[in-house]
Length: 126
Image 1 (cartoon, rainbow, N blue to C red):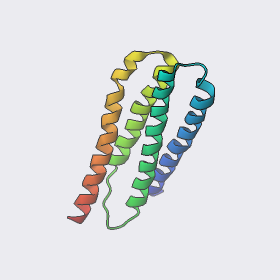
Image 2: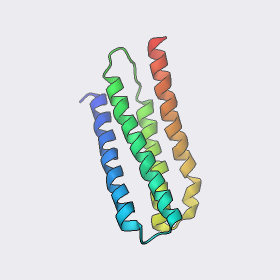
Image 3: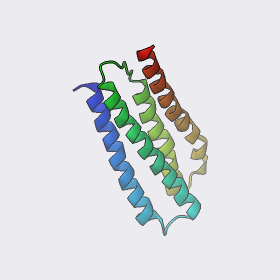
């Protein structure tokens, strides 16, 4: 299977999970956690969906034979979703506030994913 198809599938799985987690947050957590914790959880869902769509876009861009898209944006997006959104899910569910110190590492991975995507596109054309 071509890597871009794999990327589209992985992005779609992350998007489906974001919808599931969002529904869980809205219906399962709403009455069980504070408004602040619900907001933290929802931020994880929102960024997961943004970057799931980014992974799908990455796969679509990689289909273009004029673009040389490396796996680095994909790796950073996946890592970022797991670390950034994952810690934002775990904080309200476990009460382990110290995990907030790990969250920015995931955010940095997400940023690197976009930076490497930009680099790949520019490097393909110049």
